[in-house]
Image (cartoon, rainbow, N blue to C red; front, side, top):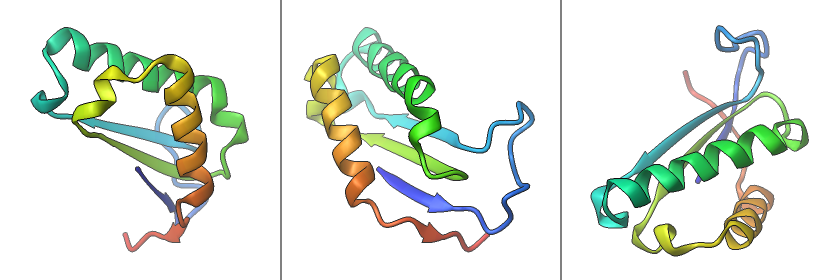
Length: 93
């Protein structure tokens, strides 16, 4: 997962939210059902925790093969840990 701070805080998507989410899930994670379930869980987590994020941030979640086997609690724990560890770098464009 990577998080980048936007250079222009007024640069937000059309919905007016300051933080945005991108998800990439390869076929190595599982079949279509597993991949879509993972993406739904990530989106639900993002909606529930958007207010806690340092705004504005762009989050990009890149799922690896074991990601499809994570429970909701494990997914929540790992995303929170990654956000604490992720350096929020100034984006370059």
